[in-house]
Image (cartoon, rainbow, N blue to C red; front, side):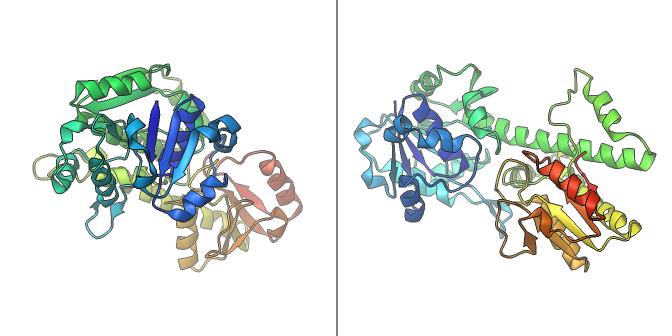
Length: 399
């Protein structure tokens, strides 16, 4: 098929490159001219494992075009448009900002080819679907919804191996065209209405941080009880009803999706009409664990007469360079406000606004080294070796 991708962030680029690998013609649109020029020169705007391999592959790159405006596209040949623009949280209203989505739909509504399947991959609250369409005078029956479930760090794998494919819409012809596009994927296709498709996405992004928060609360309770955390989590995870996947403690969780989506889920309902105590307290649990992590670091440092705290790994999780809502950055800022001497070690990410180093050998003696998430390659063994020779202690808040 001939596909257009609006937006070249994580979702847009991974989706477009994935479809190009499957033999489809893919045209990207992004109004950021500098980003488009970089893409034309095979310069990716972020790190994602395996993405560069598929992006730079000659036959795939020939199937892709990069455009800084809508007018550059030959819309007569386009069959499907995926809108993958950001829907950030508006700090003033504490709700989703839909201006980028509205702008994209408005541009597409002016195109003469009305057979195009306009598909929203951006995450949008169910109650906003009508508002967005009414604001720009667009018939919501012409929209389809295809929420994404890509994990940063394994997005390429997730694209080619989805657990399920969700298609929401009210127009059977357009739904069937999307189903045809996904025929080659080995996954169940769930077709539903637009509201349900978006609630599936939001509640998935509610359950996952809830599960992470449970593991973190289990960590605190195990520490308090003098229990062996690894044994506790393993014993729980061996229950087939629970499982061990996505059941690992952490300094706290972050990223671009979970915090934003949790805020929005709690905007869905009138608190006087509906009480959801579990969902409404997931963020509180995460904040509490962040504070607990900081206390653990301070206690370890003081009890061992160490001078400095070194946080290893700047991103919000392993295998990405995304700093959005990074627990490392949050811990760093809070420790700095408390007057602690703290520095971030990251061998790949530059941090001009933070005290940071890029070499293990720059760690000073008598430091507490906190490894914020599992490290790749032989980084951990090098840290262990360096710590043993320089009177440092290593702490793993995720283990």
